[in-house]
Image 1 (cartoon, helix red, strand yellow):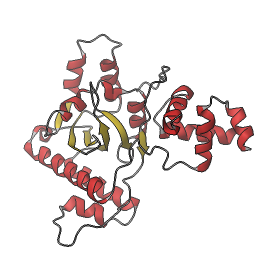
Image 2 (cartoon, rainbow, N blue to C red; image 1 turned 90 degrees about the horizontal axis):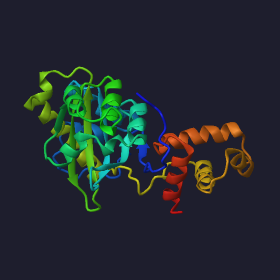
Image 3 (cartoon, rainbow, N blue to C red; image 1 turned 45 degrees about the vertical axis):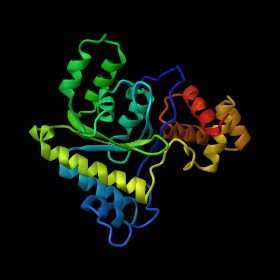
Image 4 (spheres, rainbow, N blue to C red; image 1 turned 60 degrees about the horizontal axis):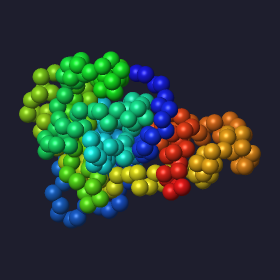
Length: 275
């Protein structure tokens, strides 16, 4: 996987979070609750919610599960939030920072259908074979191959009033014939609808409208200085902290906003602060 930075500074801020949010309200008395949703609602803490989702993942024979929210775009849906708890977070950060979603054919297909878009790496490689070697689609497929994932299914759920749509993506290292079977499609639909119900009715998926909700006061101050173009040395002086502390928080902020470099972080901070 190539981690070379993008220098154009146009990478939009995408909120990354490492767990499902806590329950905001309980289900109504007598409500019919499917098994996977009941497991999420019964979980008492973040670790319990992780185990519930890991159990859903294991039931499909897949290795990774990614979920989050999308906003419609002229060419392809664009993520506004993604969970990093059930897939390699390095891949998710790289996917967002490289803006692979702009050329990811899985997203386009899933957004146009009410059924999961089933894919294999071989199919994606065949699609990319006819484009120039340095084309974004070729880079995306090569980076995806570097994760070891060889197939999966992606489901985009119905929209909300603000235009957001939730998505669920399952990925497998060793997909078998079940990947193309009705059995797996049914499991993906069940997981997708249960997660969608959890986020829309009982919890609430973080979105780009509140990108600084989980930032510490120091990180908020650092973002303000970054938006004004100040150096790490000046930031350390203003906040009366060490340069090592500034460097640590800068790394955390780049991960949080799925950006590779200072230029991209400055843009993300200005968008968050409305500057």
